[in-house]
Length: 293
Image 1 (cartoon, rainbow, N blue to C red):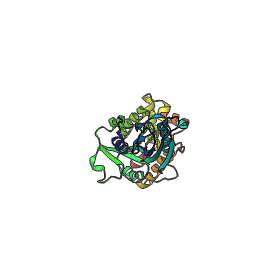
Image 2: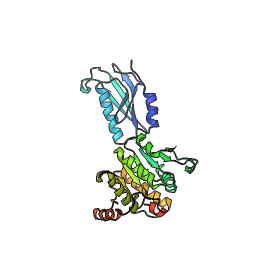
Image 3: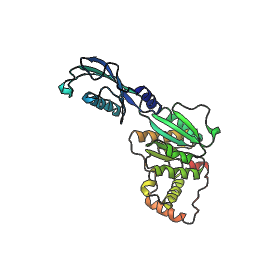
Image 4: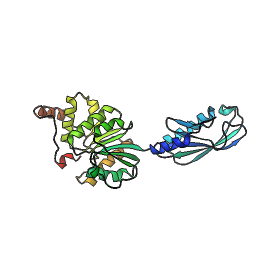
């Protein structure tokens, strides 16, 4: 007896914003592996339930995954003769529908609920992102959240990093530079972020680079951090202006565009490291303009 568990699995996929294609046997004539109404779900890396196995299921799975890769949204109907040409000996005929369900969404982990973060979420909520939003302070969150945004009040935001899904986007926008630095180490240590940006000036970037180098992080690891964040074509210090700039960089990234190089040159970094030997390594909270990209 076949175990058709696709209903519960579909609910899980929708909860995790994972797209799939539902393959349904619409019509069966003659001898076919499964009857009309049978369904299976195909994701990029899994098959849930079955339409009977064999070469028919193999071909259907291949077609479904091609639809996922192409981000197709329209339903398709295909008819298959289950003869020698398809590699099956049933001799019947099956009509299958291919229905895309859900859209691929990136996962953004946002630390900090300040003015810029709040302005940014109004934009991100309209983009293909689902957001996990962290802060230690319950009172700083707005009363209502945009669709797809989940807030988490945590006394240990650094410890939360290890629980995030792989290949997430990370934005660090907290009110505390030491917390920013601890989050930076935790995110880099994961080695699986799709994007890691931190709000701040070039001065903050140089100080963090120096501290990370002192703790044994390689240049390759340090370069996974983007700071300052945002596209240079949009500048300004108003939260809405910064939000638009940062959203533009996120869009460019998930669209596969090359991001601007904003890291200090090697010569500039070397000079800065010389200057910092006489400075304490701990960084205090700078004025507002120092935190703006």
